[in-house]
Amino acid sequence: MWCRKAAHEAGYRERGRAARVLADTDFMTRALRLLTWNVWGRLGDWEARQPAIDAALIAARPDVIAIQETWRDGDQWPQLDRVARLLGFHVAAAEPEGAAGDLGLGIVSRWPLAGRHVHSLPVAGSPPDSRIALVAEVMTPCGVLPVCTTHLSWPLDQSHVRQAQVRAIVTAITTGEAGNRLPAVLCGDFNAEPGSDEIRMLNGQAAVPVPGVVFQDAWQVGGDGSPGHTWSRRNPEAARERFGDARLDYILVQWSGRGAVLGAEVIDGHLPGGPWGSDHLAVLAELDLDALAGKAPEPGG
Image (cartoon, rainbow, N blue to C red; front, side):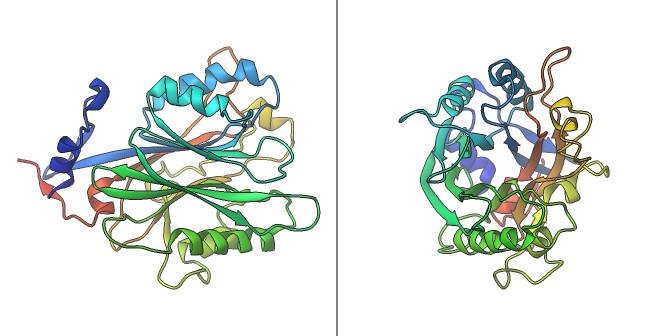
């Protein structure tokens, strides 16, 4: 059964939203839009920033959102719940035990979530730190898509820690592959640039954590050829740190023998004349659901 037919039968047009179909000269392709964003918790004037976050998410029309640096209030996740209500989506959330500050992670999906898994990550003893990876099983029309969001340790001298965290994540999210499970998508703020060992070990440019498991960098494959900085001096919230421009945020798609990235863009999240949504910029990628499901392209007719 083609994903297009399955999508229709699964109610892909739910909530009155027309299914997005991209066409080329010979084939029809169904795209899943996935966005990742470190939204900076409750730092800065966070209440004034929230409308910029809302507006950026509405304009991006994502199907799945991976969020870093959100927060919990008792049993509630105010920001994630707000986003879910805004878009009519489902939510999975978690935060590291003993985390200092807003280090919560969230996955918000237009499709139901079949499961939620939290994996603790190794950290250095100093400075005090606590990091996790959150995996949600998204029930797409083409099968269960494991989506992982994470936020790796930030100190510049801790590449070895981030490498250990990457090994733990890849091992966790590639365990138990079976049935209609699709290749995994790994998203988040890696606090590492593309040439770092922790990123190179994901895309196969260095020894991989798990034999046979390699990820495509959505920006490298589908971006516009620019550096794709997600930490930018154009953003006054980032410029005041005097860190320079960097690409720290990624959408990484597990390679399964056929490329699934249709395109990617960086989103400012900035209201004209108003605040920026975060100190980070967001990354949006369009993924070919048929390719993820291992289906051959279907004639357009």
